[in-house]
Length: 319
Image (cartoon, rainbow, N blue to C red; front, side, top):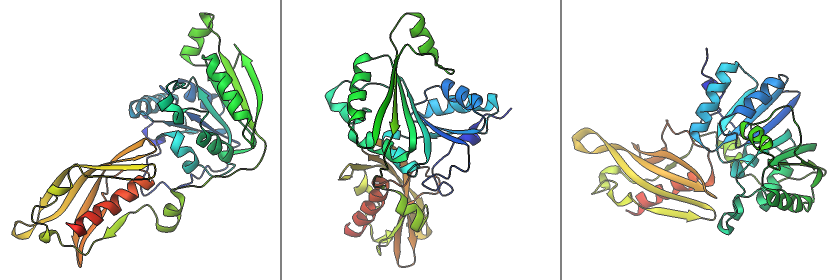
């Protein structure tokens, strides 16, 4: 039986943004699906719908993929990403009928405020990607959190709270939800509907649509002109807005006469705390070295990734 790994949507040259959701009778997104129990059951119960699951944990994605394989589902696709940043990048305006969050971390500490559902950036993204009349459903065991989300989202110009139910019954549940209900714990379901058109700026679409999933910068600098190779790059970092990047270890491959003909630079790129790791390749070309994403890179072309390529090229020129 299939392991379900074909249901994982991996970033790269073949994945274009925004996602093409086809002509499903209903489209739903679950944010933070954990082990995938709810996600798989929902997709199985709604065979005519398309469910997209987004989860930041790679191990959770792998576990969910195995569940999908055992269930033999074709209407469920999963993505390893931080939906807080990527939701608006993955989906076009008015493309989702439903967005679901089951028992998210409330992030109670002040320094984590931007991670909450109550953050303005999340509310704006939600208002953009939902269809008119589409709903956001949040289930939580934290009463104070439900109240805070209700207050915040009801104040958004394109959203309206349409329901707030306590210890509700629903067709598909999670393991912890069933356990907590048996223990007599209070669980709140908040339902929020989209009532007006709304849009947000996307930071990746133009690059995918206009240039394709490729990033490269020509430097005019020859690798043979670098006396110590790329030793100067290890540990270097940069920042622009909410984008951060750092260059870690680098590896050289030899060329004729002992001169390196290419380098791989381990790079960590973070967009508003959404972290991606990849290798940037520095290769010799006619007219000088070129910096580009390595062909094995499975990353979304976010600002931090693009800025890292540009920054590495700049450092080569100035070396």
